[in-house]
Image (cartoon, rainbow, N blue to C red; front, side):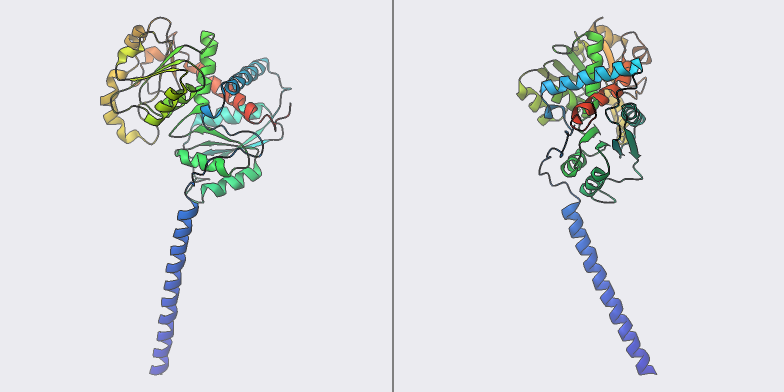
Length: 357
């Protein structure tokens, strides 16, 4: 009995060891495979089979950007006329990926697409985890098999590029930590409504040299205007993006730490000092950004012609005062509404080969 029992124990130990070795090998293979497939290859983004991606403003020509603006104006006109006959997205579906939540982005895209006949599917951060639950490229292939367009609001810009690389349908950039092109196009639409033009105006951004600034800079590579970023030392925008804008040679670009640079501005634009995911830096930013608050004194320094803009949501009393955001110079709520109309204009341009006329 003893020998039989010992033999059985040896067999069990042998099987246990074999299972352990197998588990280790499988784990190693999975980790190796994950390292090969879950990281963006960086090969570059090809256009989808039909339509166009909307990733960066300078991916388009000036004429194409102007076409988007014209389409947005028409969409807004139809909206106010309650014209229910224009349904170019009838029968089409859009997947909306959010790893960075936003009420404005969700409502403006979902409502806008619906009003033009389409149906939008909202995927929140718990439903879809870009690059975590499964590789981004797999998500791109699956969702583009179900939908006509994908809108993504993400933290990582590389995730957006990988999504576009492997998607069969157009991908619309709803925001990344690098840029926010939909917002800037809505801002241009608003400026044109208020000022009657955009080209040649002086836009001064006051605050952190963040994703908003990068989009203003990439716009400056296609449409000529004067852009000034006024920020505290150490908060300047990405140097390569500044160089890209300057290399185009059509706009006046300057980065300054001097708040007096707002003099003569047609537009003063600001954003929160600490974006989502950066709130742990707020205490330091309160010290660094204090002198750069957009208040009544700064607006007076700019001049009576100056319009105030903010992409919202605003931290009233921090980057701007309550008095400024509620002043006659403020167009922030007109700007917010224009997000929906401008995004419709962008989608009408990028999906024109698919849309029903």
